[in-house]
View (tube, one colour):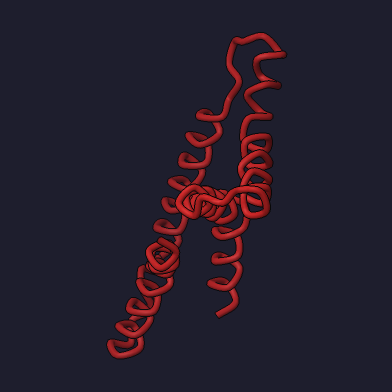
Length: 125
């Protein structure tokens, strides 16, 4: 179970490695805008994408306590899953249940740290 999780987390790194190797052999720099108009179009597309993402998380016309409860769901669930895994390691005897809790804890940990860490390392190269 852990092997599949590790392999799945390394897929983006492998894809970037293959892309980098192809660019190294072909001398390509990837998709780069060739003129100022293309740069402006890409910036507009990125702005529209960010606006769409902001609308997904928009509160809308709901009561403030509902908005607060909705905003607390992710941190509370993350806290409960990670603490549940830690407690299961020390208190449970069922290896299958501990393994399932470990899978959930891995998902939450990657949600919290993995994407940002990967982007940090990707930006550094």
